[in-house]
Image 1 (cartoon, rainbow, N blue to C red):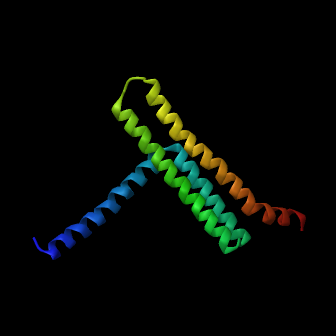
Image 2: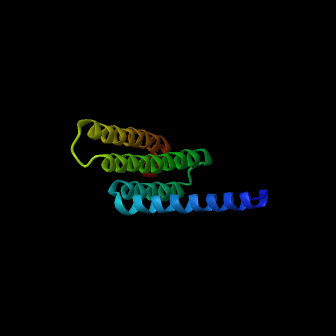
Image 3: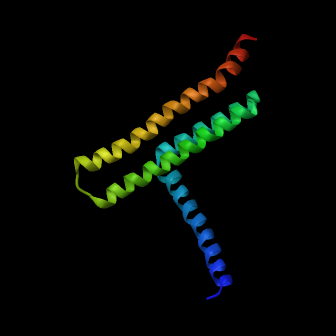
Length: 130
């Protein structure tokens, strides 16, 4: 097998990894109520950002917060599925692992709300005061 063959295999493997990731994302959106809520919240924030014409730096922060939330929700779902796969029986450590993963999403959600307040506080105040 020459270098050309390995490259082709590598590109094919890379392409497949995107396919698998897309399937995972579709699964999380389809099966997880919390992810659908995050998608709705992200859509609202994007519409608000466009409506208020927020500055580029605020857009960058908004994109980071939205992307981070999606990533954490997918990781949380993966942890839940692995725990469910390992044991069907109730086990305190399995519950704890799932609770801790969910806590990570909760903490990030609180941070996201705080950042959203920082971004949209002034435009909303200006809208209602002027």
